[in-house]
Length: 275
Image 1 (spheres, rainbow, N blue to C red):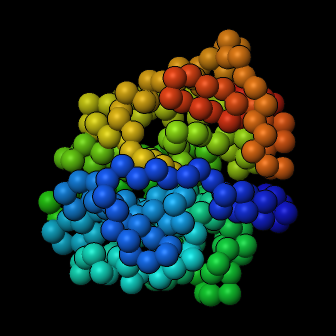
Image 2: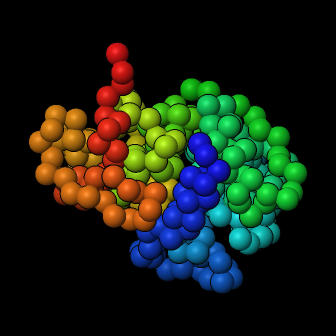
């Protein structure tokens, strides 16, 4: 990915979707709002735009993504829990890794390492030594003590995108793989056919979760997955009445397809895997 494209991506994501609070918000400072979504599960929204999750077990707490990096995320997390923190990135885009430098080690899929380093160069932590990256693979389990989250590889939004399934509390932490508006037109995105295969993989886990915790905006119920899959399939089979997606200069040439609640912005020239 070229430097100019990365800068455009980082700038555009900063302006991404507005969060509409659905539960009482605890104002932590001008940057963060913390929402307790379930027992020992917090959704921390940075700049009303991007979600950071804190999941607490008996022995440790898992932090999923670290936002833009504009505030003291570590201090905020330590005000919520005194347990040791484990940090995992769902993918390597700048709006999900910005506070990584506040922590000594980060778990992430190795297929996004290159994207991660490129994003860090353009981000808020560009002049600070980066943390150690620990590679994640399919089936890795984070055991927090009385609470386990399992990693799923879900390529599409990026090559190294992951989701985490909490079967006991029936939640899917989806990163940018599942949002109210899914971005699949970026240079870092894989063909739409690959993304659809990852959705089908998640569909096989439907019995293990009820709620989808996305990278942006509020939680979604699991019926949203079917709407999203129907939307993507209509693009692949040519039945969607799409329209231009004029978000910013980085979305030039992108199309938008809608089905019920689902909205997918995609590159019409990158639908299928070359055989």
